[in-house]
Image (cartoon, rainbow, N blue to C red; front, side, top):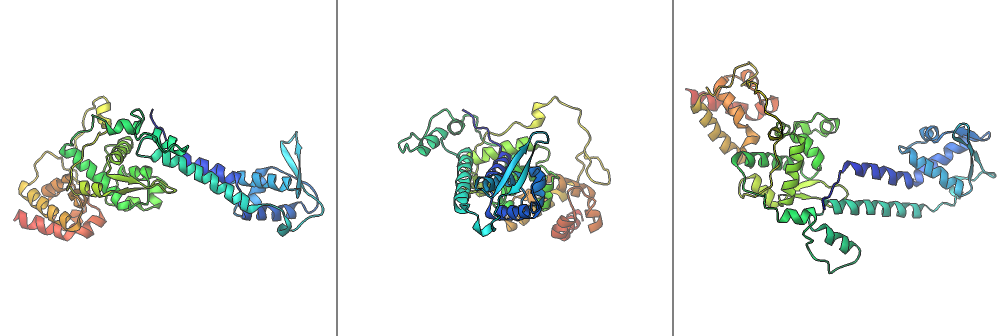
Length: 372
């Protein structure tokens, strides 16, 4: 069997849980609104309009549930109007103060907690790295369930013969993905990390400041589907850990950190690049810098090697992969353009103000010394 799960659906379920279990605050605010608008008799209003009058009520469904609770408790009466598809709401005499409403708020809160616990249990099942069959059996009390069913996606992944050693190019891609996971430091899940790696300009990414990370857009050429599959492969390989709390955020395992720093290697089932799934297209010439020079391999190899040596030492001191300082493509362009000032440095593709501030002075010094 194959597990299909989209974490975005959790938001929908949370909406329904909040809607079915209104808080004491929402019920109180609703009752005060009804006492005001129904002071002179019944009011014909749809739930959407009533919800707009209730402070803190962001969930229209919760207002509808609160109306039902007040009606069931005998504090309001609601008569359906067939022609208008709305209800006429009136207060039941004698009108009571909110403190006198006999509603069991503790019971409502406990029900909400139970509903959320069930949802989080489902999320745990989706993110469970072990046998799904065993998970279900143990949930229903079978403590002697076998640790493997050999048919679920997780069990099949453990015996996946497609996992293999990585090429040098794939190792760099894996390093980039793991570096992004390390930088978000357990604050985000797969979706947001994948968006960051492909350079998404979505509001969520920008509001969280993820576009300012050094790993932002590093896997743009691979595409979001590829990055999602790669993250899943790294999770199954034990390089990334999924938090089992309320939100399935990602963080590096000790193995993942060692793989990122090239202290260990790992076999993976690498996703198929999107380019390999499409028909070949005519390649466009790549520009080496913002000034428009063509990349034809005519960079100064002496300068390039000097920059690589400096980058290797710099990355080692910082404890990060070398590409975090500058990728090879940027080094090639630096070796071609050989900027002499910070203004010229900023003309090179891949170097923005932040990189220039952090590495600019040393980069210019290396170029100056090696080009002499």
